Length: 182
Image (cartoon, rainbow, N blue to C red; front, side, top):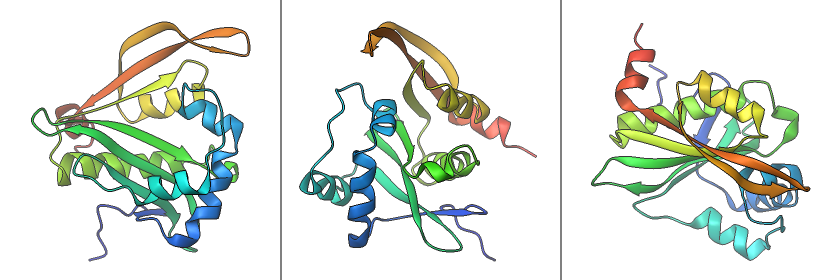
């Protein structure tokens, strides 16, 4: 049986490798990508900062590289972090760093693996995330996976002279199980 909770049809989730540093470093210089991930002003990270992030390990954070199954090429990352074990909750993040792979379902496949991991392996009860209202592609992805909009921080962020909302999404284990019964 070729089953793995961290493997989809086209991608697999793995740890980071030393040779991933230049690739992840290039993503930190991608202003469009970084402005979708962080409310802080855009600033490329140093290799030391990226190395520390890649090697970070704790009982509250589970970070995975997203790799293509056929070539092992690194195309992004997913993570569940900020886990509150006593409450069974965690925060989800995804980034497809290589824009050649945007819009082709790789993010959905990677998040599907991560959600399965969080609910089945980590036994969490709730996952949550925030997204900026201008990131329509991500909002569509989260809704397609069953995340429900739970709140809206109005005019939370200013970018390029405009104000944008930050939207809170949540997914409960029971909802996920119900949506994945077949």
